Amino acid sequence: MSPSPLRRVTFIGIGAIGLPMAEQLIEAGFDVTGVDPSAEQREKATARGLHTEPTPESAADADVLVCMVATPEQLRATTLGENGLLRHLRDGSILVVMSTVGPQAVREVAEAARPTVRVLDVPVTGGVARAITGDLRLFASGSSTAIDDVRPILEAFGTIIDCGPTIGQGQSYKAVNQLLCSVHIVAAAEALALAEQLGLDPRKVLPAVSGGAGGSWMLSDRGPRMLEGLDAEVTSTINIFVKDSTLVKEIADDIGFDAPIITAAQAKYLAAKEAGWGQKDDSQVIQTYRQQ
Image 1 (cartoon, rainbow, N blue to C red):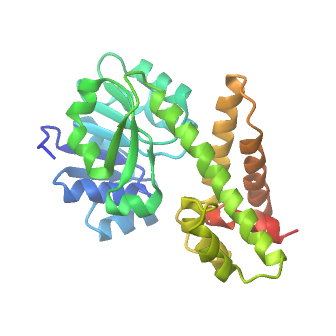
Image 2: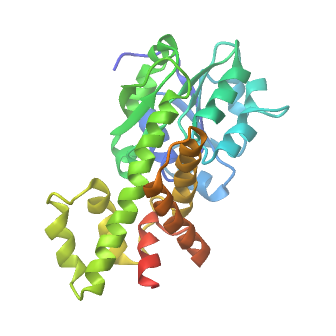
């Protein structure tokens, strides 16, 4: 990894995945300030050596702003309008959108940022486990020059996948990825719930099938937490997949693409949210089958 002249980074959104990503930057030698409205998250981050602030005052002096908010609405609120960050970022700085927000939202931000701030569209996949180890996959789209300028920062997070020069292409790659993730989690939940209904011990079924032709990364990763129940450690919430499955469905609808499998998965996440499990780990979508 070559040195970068862009050293000062403001990282917005230091939650479950954002905090270990910010830690990767600190380990790589960058000057990082983490921003989060949650006092609890800031306290956790401070205890792990990250300088924090509740609002992005540091963004005015930052070389690079990494945005890891949860929704398209949060991205727009953070960047656009009279109080948006685009009014405060210095000329020549780079805004890297790493959230899953869909092509339209990131294009709106990129258009509003021209010509003073360069915007890159770089959503990530791999979850908390791979954020901790720096092994995320980054779906990067935008100016190749801007990507090269922030390459040492991006490489601290994991592997860069070149998705082309058009802003929004990274989000489109991520939509394909999230369709698979959404469906595979629900499929894993359905399979293990079926095992339970058949009177089998799911702790024996899980290793028996996860290494075979029917296995998936999501079955191996989420399966053990599905068996732990509602008290399982939260690494990604049901609400995140309500958002992501809905976003994928909207993207498919916008282009007239019939996507019945993501529609079925979305219904399970919505049912889990309606049952009061929105803040539980996404593995607990299995409860919608147990509730039957």
